[in-house]
Length: 237
Ligand SMILES: [Zn+2]
Image (cartoon, rainbow, N blue to C red):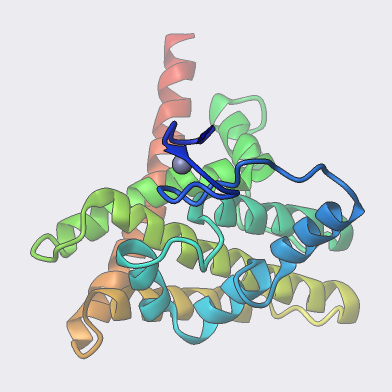
C-alpha cells in the first residue's frame, strides 16, 4: 500500500483515488519547464485564455469562476498583480504616464510619498483600491447574493483587464505619438461598467448605473483616503 503525500489516504497503484495526486512525481526536466511556460500562456486556460474570455464574456466567466470551476482562469489576485506589472513595464519602456496619479506640486509631503508608492506599486495599490470600490458595490448591490470577497474577485479580474486596456493605449502612444490616453481611460471605464453591471444584473439599466458610480466613488474615496492619511501623518509630525 502507498500513502498519499497530499491527503494521507492509503491506496494501491500510481494515483491516489481520493484526491488524484500521483504516487511518485516525475523529475524536473526540459519537458517540465516547457510545459510550465506553455501552461502560463496557454490559450486553453492560461493568461491569454483568461484575457480573451474576460474581454468577450466577463460575466459568465467570473460567475463560473466563483461558483463552478476555479481552474479555467488565472487566479484573480495573481491576475491583477501580473496585469499591473505589465502596465508598469510598459510605462517604463514607453513613458506614457501623465497624470493617472499626478502630484508634483506637493513634493516632500507624506501625501506625495503615498502617491509615489501607488505609482511604483500598482499591483498592490489596485488591490487596495478594489477594497474601496468593493465596499461601494456592496452598498449599492446589498440585496444580491454575493459576499464582499466575491466582489473583490470580480474587481481583480475587471480591473486587471482595465490595466491591459491602459497599457495598450500607452503602447500606441509610445509608438505613434498619437495621444489617445483619454480615449483609453474612457474605454477602460466603459468596460468596467459593462462587466460589473452585467455581473450583477444583465437586463437592468440601473445595474450599470450603480456599477459606474461605485467605480467612480471607490476611486474618489481611495484618493481622499490617501490624501487624508498623508495629511494626518504630516500633522502629527
Ligand atoms: Zn490523496
